[in-house]
Image 1 (tube, rainbow, N blue to C red):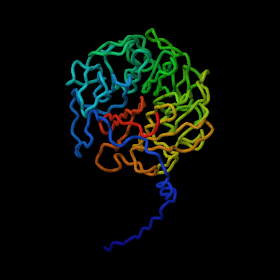
Image 2 (cartoon, one colour; image 1 turned 180 degrees about the vertical axis):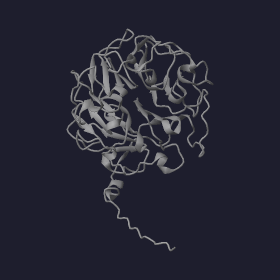
Image 3 (tube, rainbow, N blue to C red; image 1 turned 90 degrees about the vertical axis):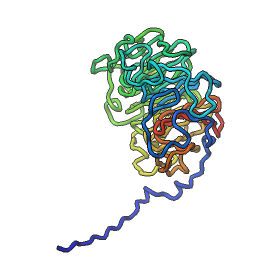
Image 4 (cartoon, rainbow, N blue to C red; image 1 turned 30 degrees about the vertical axis):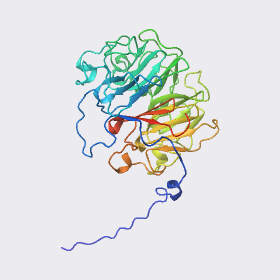
Length: 404
């Protein structure tokens, strides 16, 4: 029996490799050398090691919040099901945390601390932000948001208020019902507190919930819903084709020069409303990452990214002029400078990749201090960028190279 050889010739698709995409100019977004790296090191071991819980370790952190210029800093140590707090802004790599919420001590891990759900337990905590004088945490797999009236500054301080559940002991999605309500949640991953309003990315219900003031009672209903036409539906893209009000996987929120922005990771886009919406299901005004409001493919159906494409953007934050997105599956950060809401132009600032045409985790090499692997969270605060570099099991504190 003889073996027949087949000659294969592959013709490169010009849509995959566009020379000018790799040479598009950009502004460096962050100063490459971080001020401090928490959790894993600046150059972690090439061979991954099990992450043992401790005061200095992080496992898949998805959110971090510097509450004031000098601290405290709180991190959602998502994989260890706990919150870690630093009294002051850390200045040294792998500096141990001062405080802990969610486990009995720094050496323990497990959902809800392996005990009954309560006001000081968490199950996949993800979103975190300062809220008034206190703190808000998206306790995603307990299907709730925890609120502290004052900033917690000790171990296992119990939350004061819970929304998404009627009390601190219940934890079922949508209260165990198939339909949501203004009082229920399903996987709330993102939280923000802007202009006195509490904003929640109620991801599993494909919607954003808004309270016009900080809730003061357990189970308090939301005042406004975006992404759905009412509080009782949870259809993907509002039960229709993608459009100018629907969502698939909303994950984080912020205000950019007074305009509400939502990272809709499932539709690979950023939705921007002019000002602040006042009606349920309000249509957004501008989309970033897609050519128009009906397109949803990652990287606009291209293998290699561009300055105007996104692939599962999970994190979002804004300084005075800059909107910065954690373009998670492209392992990079993108920045847009504010020039009004009349353009859908590409990003002009970049961090994590050598150019807008690359997308590899850690640039397809072992991790270094200025590389990223699936960054889930970004917070801009007073000229600093707090980056939750989830795939590298670390949170890095950088200086912005652009104005805040």
